[in-house]
Every structure is written in C-alpha cells, then in structure tokens.
Length: 123
View 1 (cartoon, rainbow, N blue to C red):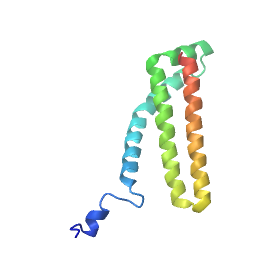
View 2: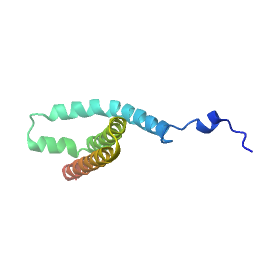
View 3: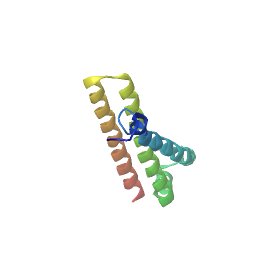
View 4: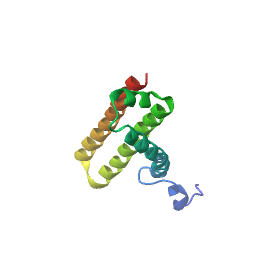
C-alpha cells in the first residue's frame, strides 16, 4: 500500500519531468551571459576599426580568449535551449522533430566554428 498522495507523486515534475532543471539552466546561463556580454561588447567595440595585427593581439590575450570562448559556448547553448522550448510550444509531430534537430545542429555547428576560429587566433 502506498502512502503517497497524488500531489506528492507529482511534485517537482513537469510534463517531461525536467522542467525545473531546464528553468534553472536557463536562469544560470542568463546570469552568466549578463556578466560576460557587456565585457565582450566593450572588447569587440574597442577593436572595431583596428588593423588585423591589433585585433589578433587583443584576442590572443588569455583572459579575453577565455571570456570569448565562454560567451560563444554559453550563448549558443542558451539559444539552443530557448529555441527548443519555443519549438516545443508551437509545433507538432515531425515538424517539431525536424526543427529541434536543425536548431541543435546549428547551435553545435556555430559553437564548433567559433571555438575553432578563436583557437586559431589565440594559439
């Protein structure tokens, strides 16, 4: 005999059972991006109009390279999870599956290209 009420069995579970984890991931990544993005805007803005050697020197600095890599990775993962949520809300069946796969491939592809380019500059 189970002594759990219906409410106790349902507590902490969304429709998929991972709604709370998704919410916390999005919240934490948004806070991280709120700290990183202004720094990146300043760095990128200060290099606009500079010659190639100056831009390479700025992005070869370890702190700038790490912040840029974090901005790329966290930003694109945040984009992917947010877009996936929107797709799940507004599309159905095979269209939903194709769009989620497309957004995931796009996100990982852009992350790979961005980190590769950053590594070529920083190393």
